[in-house]
Image (cartoon, rainbow, N blue to C red):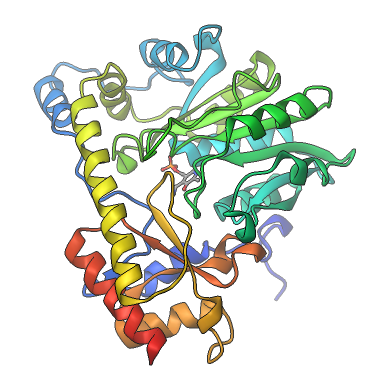
Length: 379
Ligand code: PMP
């Protein structure tokens, strides 16, 4: 029987990250998940408990409560108005909305390689073609505006950038972002800046392209910054014409983000969880340093110290002789040692030869997981 599915779903599957995690059981040492392990900040939970009975939990305005959009606008720059903000079901919905309103069949969207796997699928879902630009391992996965510019054609509709980057943890330099904006401002295309890891940096604050590029949409969420992934609070900030279209698409797709989550988000953006945010970041810094020490000690595998996010992108290319590729190695590592990692190929062609290890888990999981990785690759 011919498939009942629309052509846009052909070849579309769950991302490799999810498929590998689906194979894992609770006894595994899971270094695969892209989620912090800290609980929702206590200040947020207390606020929700205290006010639950008095809040009206009906539909909110489609684009989000005015108070929440005002806070997001204020924190996004002096000239940003709440009309430019749409509150979405995580950054993931914001990315989908933006691509759906911008991309037409035949359009190309430049995406980072290695980069967050959903970019390519979302671009395809919107009818466009994803075109990867490299973040080169030989260059410490640094973002180079020149490598993006070299790929732009008259079909290019948008460029997605992600700093700090998932999976490499690299933070884009202000100089390269300025160079990119300078070159793009004369072209009819939109920069989509995915900033979900912007608050998770271990050195200098991460610069944003937002104030530099004229046509720029920023996408963000509370999933990583406030360890609130399950509350599904994200947003995009866009030029007025794009914001209006996003609001319409968002209304058709989800109506509005759950009101309860929005009340929690207002409290978070008013700063009531900032103390916990700071201590979580300190703990994450310790876990990063500990994970790097464990990789050095137990595996000797090379990696680039991540400046942000919570992943180590470890180079296993020198140990792949007995495997087909990084996916094969990750699956065998899971079967033999019960350690979940994500193969670099999940993030694009340039990522092949690496494994992504999350350092969000507790130190005992990190240490045992990495010890087992060392044993596996020695074996
Ligand atoms: N962008 C990047 C780069 C991510 O890593 C993730 C989640 N892992 C998202 C977007 C989606 O985040 P959320 O929908 O939870 O806000």
